[in-house]
Length: 156
Image 1 (cartoon, rainbow, N blue to C red):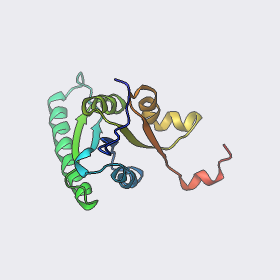
Image 2: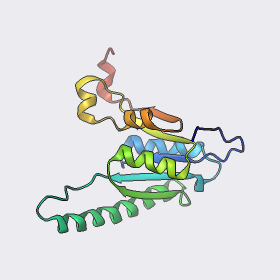
Image 3: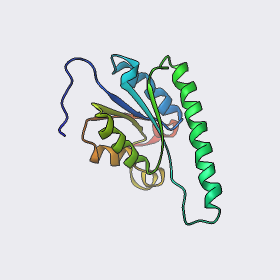
């Protein structure tokens, strides 16, 4: 489905949230983009466990515990931001894939995602969820740069 700007101002915004400071800072940006808090979807993704590993049952229970804890903490964060009515979701899976799946499901008008924007080895080590989302999303993606204190010395 090609992206269309919603001229009514009823934009649906997806914010992937990992409990980091940059993700918390992104809440304010995402909030400004929605007419009503109900149009903001905040998604936390828990990476999957290896189902072939010994102790899988305890791993599955641990995932459920993590899911419940994340949901509770997400509720606290959104309440503190004045977004008690925002939609919250906690999924298990590959972060980029889950973000893209939820964006399609909710017909997001935009995805707001923080990214370190690193290059070379540092980017590879940090991961490239934002890059994968940008490349595969069916809607616009607003990538919010994160400036690290040690980035002041970078000349790139």
